[in-house]
Image (cartoon, rainbow, N blue to C red; front, top):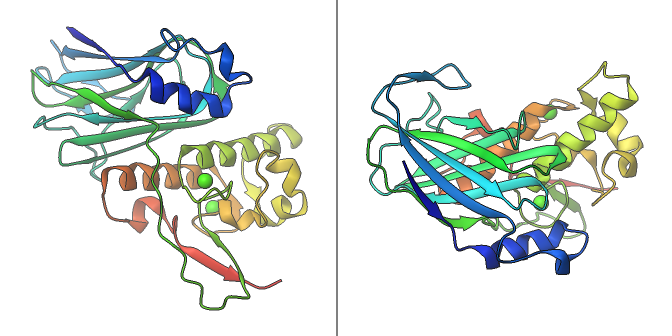
Length: 272
Ligand SMILES: [Ca+2]
Ligand SMILES: [Ca+2]
């Protein structure tokens, strides 16, 4: 077992400052420190999604200490020439650690670069494991390139200047599509679940549009349609998944795949 301590305190602080109540309360030296632990598997294990990871493979776990709280977290890793174990959609198999529990998780791999991302409706505040993924090799050398990488998405080409537009998945309208948008989707669903006494986790777009500020209190979109990235008329955890897949893929430079991302990233135009 070997350990690497990241030296990304500065970038972590910048990210944390966006969400923390008081940026000055953050201790740069010890807060939000990410650690990578690799371990060669002595026996085969079964990942969360049912995939059997063979003995001799290596598990790579990203952990956090001094956690100041996050609802969206992503990490970009260099795995060198290691062979990442992926699912049938070519996405790295990721197990959620104790810190993020049943959060939505997205992953992507391209040319030795792996991006893992999580989003949840609530803040995660504990210390411990965030993600575990797997590589076939027994001696993987993995390092963190960047924490919470931002991906600027395509520019808008409006067919008519007088129309309004939105980009599917950019729920908070900050021109980035990332796990923050995914957490806003989950938060809206959680609000609806609470309102319906836990009976419904499928929020109709029409309902969300009637009470936009209620469902999206932080950065209220002009239209709830922005969160319904598969455009089936309902905001569900599936939409959150699609956004995560899109973000992770863009962060490693993979192309859009509508099977796993629906219409995330596409522009829509409308008049009022
Ligand atoms: Ca956004
Ligand atoms: Ca939907």
